Amino acid sequence: MNDVLRQAPLFAGLDDAAATALRAAMHEIRLRRGDALFHEGDIGDELYVVIDGKVKMGRTSSDGRENLLSVLGPGQMFGELSVFDPGPRSSTVTAVTDTTLLVLGQDQLMTWLTGRPEVSRNLLHQLASRLRALNEAVADLVFSDVPGRVAKALLDLARRFGRPADGGIHVHHDLTQEELAQLVGASRETVNKALADFAHRGWIRLEQRAVVILDVERLSNRAR
View 1: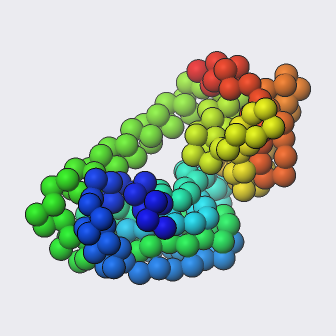
View 2: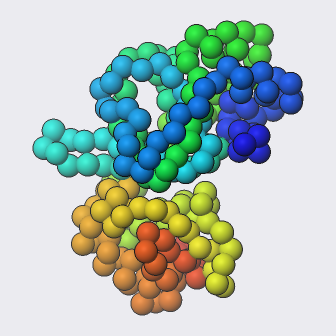
């Protein structure tokens, strides 16, 4: 668990004693696949670190359409915005797999930040990275076609969840076809067509809730 925590921005740079003390201030919760941690509009002021498993962050439009904002795995953190600005949650978070999380409340975090500027800097960097990713996602929706967005999403999933295997990178993303389409911001039919084209070209191999990337260079070129 300590190795996973070291990946989270909140723990980066802390010595062992400080990391142990911060871990002691957090409590653990477990979710089963499909369980919602919280819903868009819920009031909350807690920060979460994924220890094991995956969660998805999504929003629902007024007409019922769903958009998947992100998929997060071990060592990744979310909910930090509500710690600094308590209020309605901006998304719904649901377990993609059985998941273990560590939770830190606003009071505990603010107490911890006192006299620790390095932790504050890490959190600000996390917020800046989240904003940069959001800006990039908006630009992709405007300027990139669906196959380009699919290629980029696969590479991002590979960067975070990929493992070397079978002459390529095995990415067990655990997403359904519908969830992958929601992540890209397109219809399932259009995304499936792009995936089938990539597979036909020999760039990827499709598996159940997974993909093996066989040609990173060509997929990267298509993502540009």
